[in-house]
Length: 197
Image 1 (cartoon, rainbow, N blue to C red):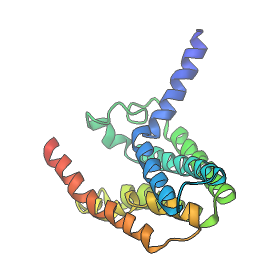
Image 2 (image 1 turned 135 degrees about the vertical axis):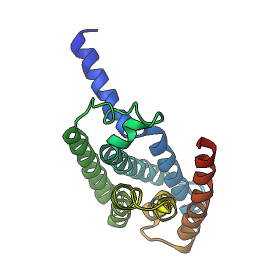
Image 3 (image 1 turned 120 degrees about the vertical axis):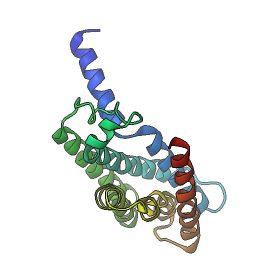
Image 4 (image 1 turned 45 degrees about the vertical axis):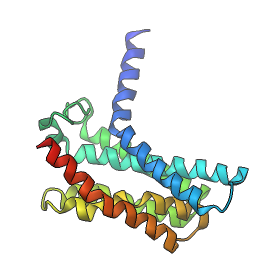
């Protein structure tokens, strides 16, 4: 392998790390659960295809939100052992690179959802992006310890996105799935916080 090849592979790995892959995988998994529950019986081939397209779009927008979060919190991340390895925290990727990467992922994911799924799912997914990347990260996190309670709404959205992707609407079943995750998030997070203190 040449130095240029290794450098390109390293740069790709840095951008991939910005997407917080483990967190995004969990988001997409919860969205998939919403999709499967929204379909009565065993999904048809066309429904499996729709699920795959929807998961791809949701993955891209969620990854964009994660990258934006890394950009906004790079100075905080640099001071914490758990996050100091992130490429933005280490200065391996510039703010403009992270911003363009986030915008590109969000735009592509939104286009996939609008064309391949339905406009409702796209708008709900964009609202989730704004909820996490802007309201939670920029507004709430620096100002109140209750950020996880309010911001938990974004983390509870994936099953709703999945339900909307398959039905084109948000029914009471989707709201119950939302409520389960929303109520679970604060005690789960606080328990982890107490463990880490």
